[in-house]
Structure formats: structure tokens, C-alpha cells
Image (cartoon, rainbow, N blue to C red; front, side):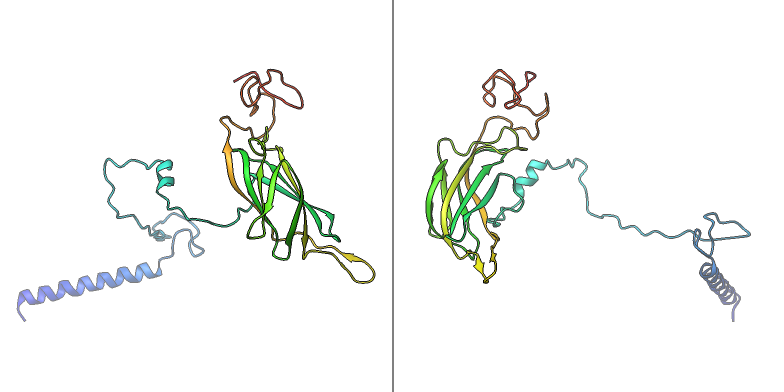
Length: 247
């Protein structure tokens, strides 16, 4: 073996020994802040290794002149999902179903406008699957008929069902009296069992927005219509019909 080969072999052996020693030391050295080494500081007498935190950085290139995308642009770029069925927990209208005489099949629905948009012009009330509307006996606030799907389709009179002066209250209403089958109570020889209306829903098909803000709650000077404006033609504020003089 030549002198150069001997030196190379000695260097390789020393390097391997150093790597093995470091690996052994690392394997046996506790992590700072762990149960084996509660202290977060490493000392000569009590050494420890810091915990390794891996992070994944984004490698996507970012242009130097990149600007945030406006929210309005994001909304317009979202594809229209199409019809998504009945709205759940909507506040544009509240539908009340009353049992006038379920034994005879007499019912009533009341649709109240609770929207912050404006007038409700047309809507359809879809009965539950176990109920079949047979006739409309009377209406108040508009005209209604039974459409081809068996729903009660209505057109409000005038400008429509009036919006509320505050979305915390109800505005105008449209009432429909009708007869229906399939939901009659049953008699077991001792008492009647009445069944609720489960599975019905109201579909608003057209509205007319108002050119003013409809407040969300009534507090003097806050969220109130301004006296003498289209939303509150009167210049006088009353407890029943409040308004504010501060625009």
C-alpha cells in the first residue's frame, strides 16, 4: 500500500467514526422541553436537542406586481350552480299554516313579508306530499289558483305584499283559505289524533326591490328611516311609525 492510499484510508475511517459518533449522540440526546429533558436550554452538563419543526412553503411563483382580487370579481367568477331547491332558514317571508277545521279539510296559509329587499309579487306554496289541495275558497291581499303541480300559486294585489319597516317585524300579508285531503285527523274511538304540516315550503318567484334601506332593528336614531323620505313619507315620528330626523 502506498503512502497516499494509507492516508486516504485513515481519513475515511476517521470520517465514518465521526459520523457514527454524531449519530449515536443525536440518538441518545433528549429533546429540549420533553419529559426526558424538561428544560428548554441545552447546557454542557445537561445537553438536549431542539425539536425540529417542518414547514411546507409554497413554491408557486408570485408576480412582483400581484394585487388582491376584489371580492366582487370573485363572486362574478363563480359558476351559477343552478336551481338548488328550497331555501332553508330564509327570512324573505314567513308562512303560517292554520287548521280551520281539519276534520272537514279546511285550512289557511298566511304569507308575511319579512324581506329586506322589497315587495313580494308572486309566490307558490307547495303542500307536503301527504296533502292534496282540492279548492281555494277565498283569498285576501291577492289572487291565487292551484297550478299544475298541485301548489297554490298566488299574485299579490297592488305593488305586491308590502315589505316591513324593519326586518325584525313582519310587513304586509296575503291570506289563502283552501280545502285539502290527505291530512285529516284520525279517531281511534277515544280521542282524535291531529297531524301537523311537515314538508311544505314557500317559493317566492318574483319581487320588486325598494329604492331605500330597510332597517334591521328599531332603535331611536339607528337603522330608522328618515322622516319625509319615500321610506317614511310622514315628517312625524310616532311610536307605531318611528323615523329619525338625522339622515
